[in-house]
Image (tube, rainbow, N blue to C red; front, side, top):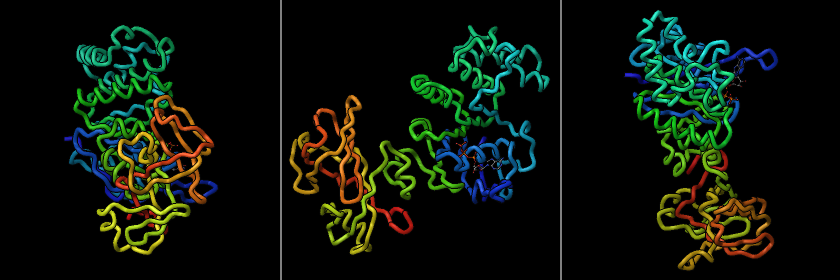
Length: 366
Ligand code: ATP
């Protein structure tokens, strides 16, 4: 069993200029056995600090960390049965790849035959057999990355910790390594905690995702749940690209008034938002839920906005379109087949079945 549990974890750092900095504020969560859990959030939100507390490289100010059934608050990193893969790979330059892979086991006084068997097994899993006698400087970034993972695999830990392992790779290689890491997880059947600031990486790798901001956990959910039901404006704006549009609006029965338009709510939404009737809200709609009417088979009866596009960006199969609604700038993502052009009038359908509403004061989803 390799469940990892955080119980009311607080971590404060002493900063010379700012005094006490609270990097993690009362975080509680459980990573399930064999789960691939991703921490995501902007720079400085506390995700690396959280990972380092699991590893034992950082000691929490208060709260408890459990690995399996064991309270590990006072357990040394090397006795926590974890292996960590760092962003900079941390390979020893003077050692061959084989020596790099075996180093940890050698330190644990593992018999040589066993070390060799484990290295060969990891090398075969990662297809790096032909690299074993090289030195790190003779490898590409992607190959070094694989070796860093291999070094974790040979230790056969119950929990793998990854700290932005793909951030030094170019975009194409990152996509390839992402697929490899997913396959590796299935093959190893291990618990993985993975830190990234890249929401696409989080959404594609994580079985569940912890979204953090300012030291606080904002939401813990599956990728689908984060996308469909973000718990607040931070999560709604962080997950999805381009981010969700936020438009100032007022509820009025089955109507939603923005500065420039009046939308008609679907019946189920009218019921859902009943107690906010008459109130100011933030209307959230994702760029992909704004559609060019000219591509629709059936013309919608309402929720069509006529506007002039300010800018159109071509992404190949899709177009990003930008237009104003009162003070709010709106982004849409439509099929390139719509052939929309900047400064020309256009009719856009807002699919309110996919809308969200947020409380403007608390920023929580209504
Ligand atoms: P990044 O993606 O930039 O690595 P992060 O989300 O991993 O960011 P952390 O590295 O966990 O963020 O840092 C969280 C907060 O704690 C930041 O405000 C950071 O400045 C602060 N912090 C981290 N380590 C220390 C330290 N050793 N001393 C003082 N403050 C620290």
